[in-house]
Image (tube, rainbow, N blue to C red; front, side, top):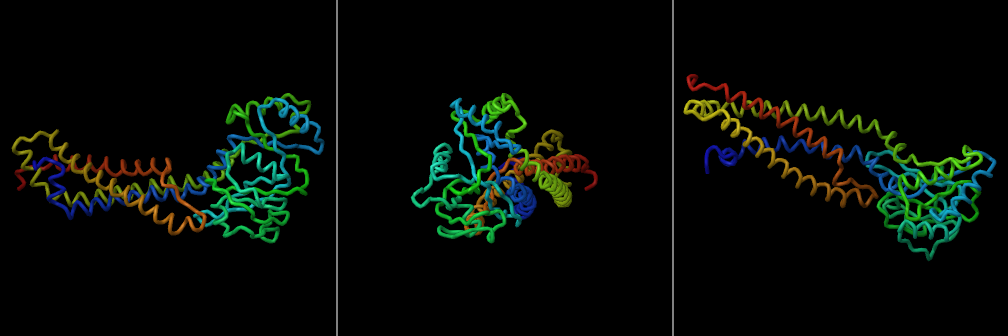
Length: 364
């Protein structure tokens, strides 16, 4: 193996290389920390996707004339399916960070309305035991609240439950979904409009056009702010994470750079010989960069494997049984982990090249 090969140095200095690889491996703390901090927002992603395919509308006043006019116009178009809702009920779920989040649920006024919703949304559910007074949850939500089929909830269980309900069915949706059926519920003057072949901006634009065509458009409100509302609530978490990620990156960069100074001081004689025998600056820089990038690549590969296995075990042994989870991938976490790695490796290459290019054979 050629001495100028990056692998040659790693092979000949296994213990030192392993120590430095472990230090670079610590940058994966930024990635895992990002998964943890962004988890409460991530819990809402399924709801955000759901609201992209439907629109909530309601009456702004006690005069329901405009509201009924709005629903009649929507029904006659054939572009949306209208499901009127009953009085709101809701439960919170527990996040991995230890605080409660939630309150995204629908109360249907009949089993047929719930069936229509499931059909339009592609939700699989066992309807056999459903009736007025039934509660339906996703499997993840039920585990999160430690509820089983047949368990009952009421206002004493949670302040935002206004009748007694029995958990009669569980769905397999990828989120904390919650539905109620109450034939006796008060008319809430609220409905959801689910697009028949239209969704997202096209659906919202269509609904807004119906609202603008009313005699009193202000008497009907249209809600489409789930994504922005949730993002606003968790914005502070993102700012805290960014600050911690950058701080940890700088600490790791300084610590690892200090460790490499001592390591490369022992090699000053080696590099002074290279310079004395006429090895070009370009080849010396290439050797140093190659060695450090190889160590970095090994650390990243090992870190990826260990992190994924660790997350898999943690999810399956600890979080899933409690109805919680951490995603294996998050774009924000990946971005700041890569940024952390860049903050570590780029200054390291620059400073070590400058250090070795100053060596002089006359000093030895």
